[in-house]
Length: 554
Image 1: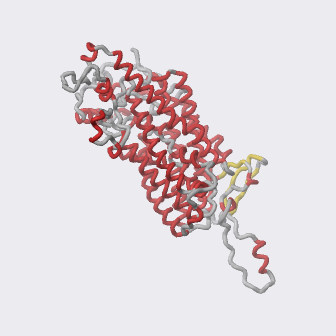
Image 2: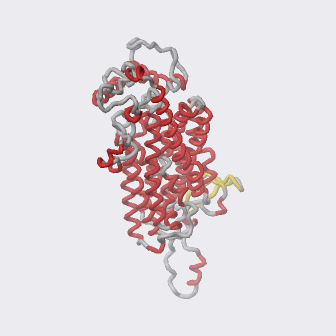
Image 3: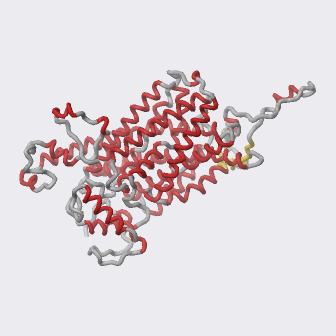
């Protein structure tokens, strides 16, 4: 039997011979609950006016059941279409509000507040349009108008440009996802080391130094230098109480220049905690992502309260700064969610609106970015990259430190497995490697070398340069290119149709008075799935006379 190119059984390999006749096999234990999925599919189709027993292309619904059962039997590495609207918003916001947001207070201090806020607004709109354009391109792939096929990011470019462009997109995609994984690991492990200091009565943590010497290091939270206290010796005066050092890299474990390359205790603990989550599928991770979203909102409020209690000093964030080197790259890095859109489309429920999900998520994330970045910059002097290091410092109140620990581990840390899952999807569906190697490259490989970037300014450099050189083009330029190509393909399809073949197209009402065989825009509208703009930005009624193309139900 000839299978589609992206059939999961083809991608992952057949594990047994399946009968294609409906009802020829007894349900297996792992298939329990699929009947509920089929009932939901029938219901969603009846709600949008479709024959409940038919595909868009005329395929019986039971054949979709065969395909879904084939997916379950072939591998547990890919998820099913069960993600709701709330789950979709939570997943998108959590992926946007990742490790990149930890550098924003420093960006505001260096670049001022005028240009960063303007850039946030522009990138928010641009990323939303790029995501909706990419989604529309995916929907234009034959047989995928309702996202029934398993299409990952690089596969879109193969459909419209060929295998060479697919390989290019795959390389850029993997670099983009790995940069997100590395930044999340580095930022979170630094805070976990501060957590070890917090729970350890000796206020210490440990690390294995690999270079320049192979030895065990111990880091203890420093107190006020003894030299400053020696002035009171023999003077008869009572020396002041010993207070912790709260500024600079001395307040953060193993951030001193002489620490070398280290593998810290916090790094190992984080690896043990996050690795099990990386074995899940995207739809199986929604529960933990919802929990992370609730904590994201709660801890953001906590941080704002701490910022206000520290006191906001306006001179720390001028209107225009003196350095814009990291501004654009850091902001673009924070909107690198477009590459995860195809994976989400493959597992979202049919009744979930693409337009509403994307614009709601980007708007909410942008507001969080601006508030945290601006107030954090106003609250602290000379923030060194990851602002959670300032909040997790042993100088802050215990409730603030606990909040920063939880935020780092749950909100930032749990975004790492999501990017691991999407990377695994890309490797499997893109036919780059088998299931075993896909798990190795996504679950274990990032941890084998992320420790090399633990200290110094490596975290800031990863966020800034990867956002500027790779994440920007793959999230903003490539979706635009594939959208233009998909539009061109649609127009070519329209031009190649003859009147006789158009009469067979059930999506076109040939009896409509407004219909004309010479009007390609009518046919184009019937094939447009995703609205690029939210309702508040769509064409007003008084401009309808311009006959601008509109979109359909998503």
